[in-house]
Length: 105
Image (cartoon, one colour):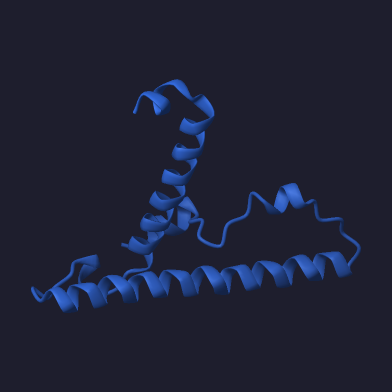
């Protein structure tokens, strides 16, 4: 704990990693379907399956979005556009639009 408090770069790395995990969890909640994200079963095995399937679904959506983004980038490059890698670093396959997230309840 004293190292964490005294080491600013370590705190930045820990915060960044925590933010990534929380963003994934939020995205997983967004893609979750049925029972409004509530695990209906009282069986631990069924609960574990629900969590794993939701995580798998979130990963599949992120993968699909990433493939779509790659296709668009290749198309832009083929048309002569210069695509800056720093711009691409800002794009996420899991990012939610505020407008879109308001439509899904």
